[in-house]
Amino acid sequence: MTNVDLFETETAILARASQVVAGGESDPTRYRLALEELITSYGRLLRESRRLIARSDRTERELNQLNSKLTQLSDELDYKAKHDNLTGALNRGAVFERAHHYLTKSPLSLIVLDIDFFKRINDEFGHPTGDGVIRELVNRLRLALDGKGEVGRVGGEEFTVLLPGVMLGDAAIVAEKIRQSIAQQEFACLPTRPVTASFGVSWIGLNGDFEDAYARADAALYKAKHGGRNRVERDSQALVD
Ligand SMILES: Nc1nc2c(ncn2[C@@H]2O[C@H](COP(=O)(O)OP(=O)(O)OP(=O)(O)O)[C@@H](O)[C@H]2O)c(=O)[nH]1
Image (cartoon, rainbow, N blue to C red):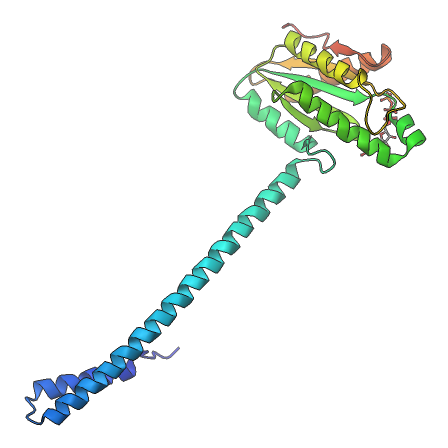
C-alpha cells in the first residue's frame, strides 16, 4: 500500500504561506494571496471535518443499533435453547442445568407430574386440544406456585417443578395444591371432561445427585399412576421429611 498524504494540498499551501512570512516579503499582494489561500483551505478543512464527524456519528448510531439487535437476537436464541416453545416452561436440558446450579447452594425438592390418560384426550379431542390442555396446565402450575419454584416440561406430557430450599413434606403440600388446581376446575379448552395429573415428589440434599433424585421422583410418580392416578406420592427412600 502506498503512503498517500491526505493533506498534500493543505501542506503545500501552508508551506507557501510560511515561505512568504519567513522571506520577509515586502509586496503586500503576496501576503494577501497567501492568506486567501490559507482561508480557502481552512474553510474546506472545516467543511470536510464536519461532514466526516456527521458520518462517523451516523455510523456509530448504526453500529449501536446493530449491537442491540445482536444482543436481542442472542437473548432470544438463549431463551429458545432453554425453553419449551409450546408453554414457555424450561426444557429438559435447562431443568437439569438449573437443578445442578441450585444444588451447589441449597437442598432441593423435585416434583414430577404427568397428565393422566393424555393419549385418550388426544385421541378423542384431537392434538390441538391436547396442546391446549398442556398450555393451560402449565398456567395452573404457575398460578399455584405463585412465583415460587421453576416449572419445566421434560417430556410430552411430563412436567417438573424445582423447589430450591424446600423440604420434602412442604413440597408434597405444594404438589397436592397443584393437583387440586388441575382436578377441581374445568379446562377452558376441554370443558366437557375432567383433566387430572399424577405426582411424584423427592428431595435432594446440598450437592446431591439430581439424576438419582429424578429417578426417585419418577418411581413415586409410577406408584401414583398405579395407585389409581390423580394423586401425590412421595419418594419412599427419603430420609428427610
Ligand atoms: N397434544 C400433544 N400430545 C402430546 C405431546 N407430546 C406427547 N403427546 C402425547 O402424549 C401421549 C402420552 O401417552 P402415554 O405415555 O400413553 O400416557 P397417558 O395416555 O397419559 O397415560 P398415563 O400416563 O398412563 O396416565 C401420547 O399420545 C403422545 O402422542 C404434545 O406436545 N402435544
